[in-house]
Image (cartoon, rainbow, N blue to C red; front, side, top):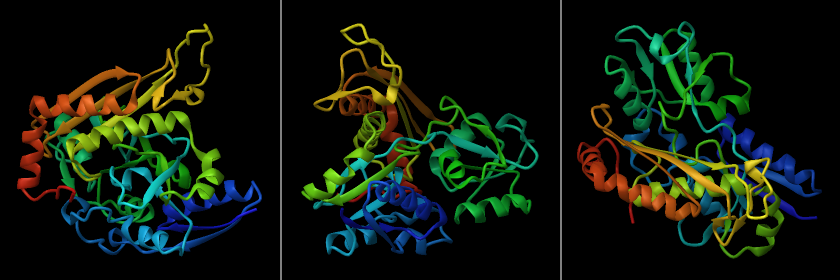
Length: 336
């Protein structure tokens, strides 16, 4: 069996993810080591992420270790991976997805609608801020950085009336006691790739790719490929006010057999099998919530569906919204 070295960030959640993949590999008889690598994003803790503007700020140093052979694979939150990987890398697997939606966390209030006028809400995500402002323009949105424990502690100490976090991370860490509401995607469209793990390797490393093939989940691969295609079409990084949420819908195939689980629906040459389709919800929003564009559509080719939705949003005014975001210095467009 193989000896595999995993590169990971050092945060509690990143290490949970790396250990999760490690356990699955060890169960197959492989020897696994985890190397902690500190990234640019980990070192900058006092500035809102949207203002940092470093493409791949949570992945660059890990990719450098991968390139020189210090590690054999990297485990990332897929939403942190740029839509276009640097030359020399590939995504070998996208794991079965945890709940991609956002969670409303509070000590006192059961849901967003229950917050009092002017309530203080913590988030450093322009995407979350924009959608909160669209439904509750009275809210006082404040930056919130730090690991999950730090953010929950600040909430517990009363610095915020509520905070918004990815439900996937909270569930993985078993820190669900302050979740009051899993926010429906129709109210807060998640980030592209949220809830999924991307396993990155050196391009052309066929041996490692084959060892990791069992980790790849067809439904997660299809849905996130669609979401990332939309993000790429819009030219946005993970900190831009863009949301994308794709789901594989269970259907009946040509032979009359119903797929009882969407995550087992097969794919053919990048497209879903006959009778299976994706539903994609997406948004582009001004950070102040005054303008929010939505798109909803179905298709059987993940990449084409994402590209088409992105083009439609740009044509309806998304280009002007994103140009204004970049122009105000709220987010830095990804570099070519």
